Image (cartoon, rainbow, N blue to C red):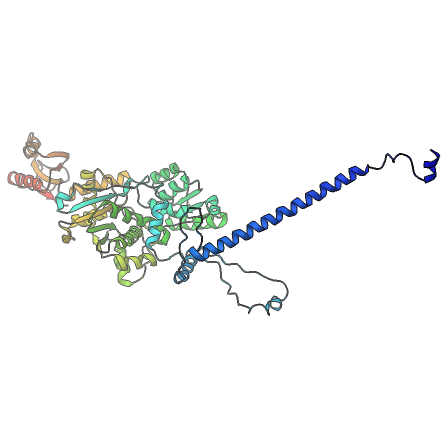
Length: 537
């Protein structure tokens, strides 16, 4: 014990220090881990070099290595088409440009690197309102509105046998609101920005266009307001409200209602829409032409109403002429308001019929007949004709009797061209006639039918002066009954007469089968009564 102390060290190791064997073992473990990591990295590097050399050899022998993933091939880029593509996107309002601003002097650090290029600033692209209509617009509209409108039938009509023409009626009155204008309205509403759809739209008319806007805006959950004059038909007001629109009666005239609607739109952020001739609205209406071409093979002629429906005429003609330039397109308008013919002669739109609404023909002129419509009509329409009001009324009668169609004047305009006989070249041809609408008020529709029966010689009126003795009226009724004629009304007058005291004048309103039957009755009565006075129409 003393010797160990003399050597200057403890006999046993200090318990606070680790044993020497543990330190050596720890160092060995660290060394083994480092060697393993270095070996793994060297192996991965060798594998990558080997794979690269293998791919290089395969590329030299067999060309580019094909990917194992299956998918559609990448379309080749044609540099000659890039310029047209960019211009097309710019016209459609889909091209966006950016500018980057650099603080300080941006040319100094870039002087030695590249030559500075002047950046041409462009204004935000806006699609022009009256952009010329293209077939691509119509086909795109057909795809977009297919779930919101009816694909109406185009069927062979029994009226064909009466006039020697194979008539196919395109029944657009079967749309929910009874008018073809639903097509253009729905395409316009679905093309609005979401912000504008949330704010709402406003329209100032009581026409078929307003009813289409009221219905489809409500279906799309777009707030809609309809401003009409105080003299608007109560039935139209009721229908628009049932469709979901807020209807406001303002002012005595349509011009006052439109001014009020524009003011409300400006103050509240609503979008004021009207029946225009923009490419979007015409594209929606032009889908009728696509359906007719698909439904009637070997078509020769298509007849459309013109005037207030000139957008339908122009848009559908663009589709038909693109698909088959040999198809003849004819527009028909009223002889009282030859708006389209006058505009084509003068080469510009006429404003004398703006804000004018006719009880029978609806809206005349206005924004729906603008520069874009005139260009299309002049370029694509083969013929524009006018028909008499009498022919329109007879057409309404024929459609009701033969097809059970309650068409209005615009809807019956196409068939009126065939009934009038102004198109003798259509004999034996396949002709499609568009029945565009059927929204005539019932009192006016009844009045039109009564007038049409008179024009068709099926309702006649005459007066006879008879002796004022018992049995004379009975003898007259017996004579009428022998001719199988139905008496609708009879009146007698014996005071305001210039004849003898004991005479009376009997006026009869009767119904016959046709013109031949009316002549037969007239001849029979003339032989029996010399005082017969036939009241001409």
